[in-house]
Amino acid sequence: MTELVTYIAGVDEVGRGPLAGPVVTAAVILDPANPIAGLMDSKKLTAKRREALEPLIQAQSLAWSLGRAEPDEIDEINILQATLLAMKRAVEGLHIQPEHVLVDGNHAPDLACPVTTIIKGDQSEAAIAAASILAKVARDREMVALESVYPGYGFAKHKGYPTSQHQHALQTLGVTPIHRRSFRPVRLAMDN
Image (tube, rainbow, N blue to C red):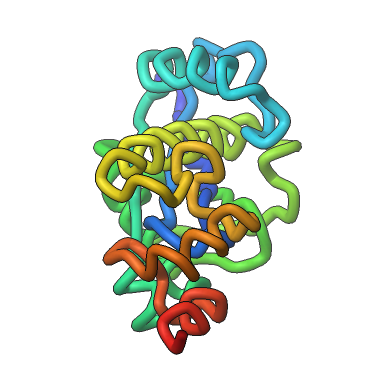
């Protein structure tokens, strides 16, 4: 008799709060026969630990995929809808389609399979924690790279979040193409 395998994907996002850059999501189907030690909410791990876990998650998972929504999409449909769109893109990008999806938070994307939302799911579900790590590493890496494209904003340090350094740069250097124009501090900088 063959054992029936249920593919469960964990999904999480990074980058809802920043003033610049994309919102990035990940979907991960872990291999129950090949557990990964040390998975937890990406915010509770050091950058070095997240970067060490990233290749393990990619190598040992049954499937993983990244999704994203760009600043212009965020401005057009709002950050929540853009996040849900990015989550849908991540799940649809998996080469194994899951039978069930666990999403961190209390909002679910519209998917072809059942979805369960779990508040603080990145602290209780290993697949969601794995997704949070992949999304965080990918987005942080991109924001570091954007530092050289848009020098003076400090993207490598604050990753686009509304720090005082970032808001000062907005006032003095202006708005870049990667800024979210629908976010109030960016709108105010454009008005000045």
